[in-house]
Length: 106
Picture 1 (cartoon, rainbow, N blue to C red):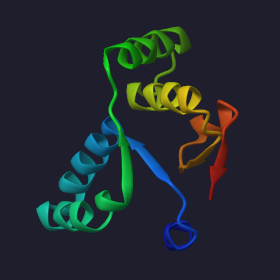
Picture 2 (picture 1 turned 90 degrees about the vertical axis):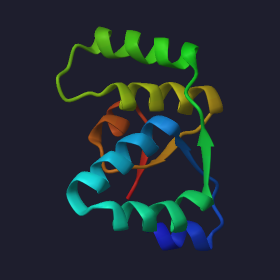
Picture 3 (picture 1 turned 180 degrees about the vertical axis):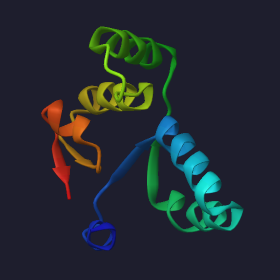
Picture 4 (picture 1 turned 180 degrees about the horizontal axis):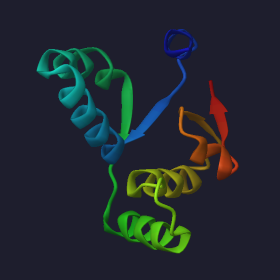
């Protein structure tokens, strides 16, 4: 699916929060060489949307309102960014995106 998105030259938008979470998880599970490969091969094709104070605050409000253990601040800020940018499709394996009425790939 990743290769297909790249071949179709889709704009791939990610927040800095998602990058932080991804890098932390990759380092913990696989070590620095995997992080370095991710940084060199994947990050350059991504458009990074930086979470600012207002998006962070909206994400915290949404997180607290949802009061669900498995929902993360990263998820909630991602939803806010997607709504602000008018994005309706997510390349995500997290069921929370579908719950929020986003189209999920795969």
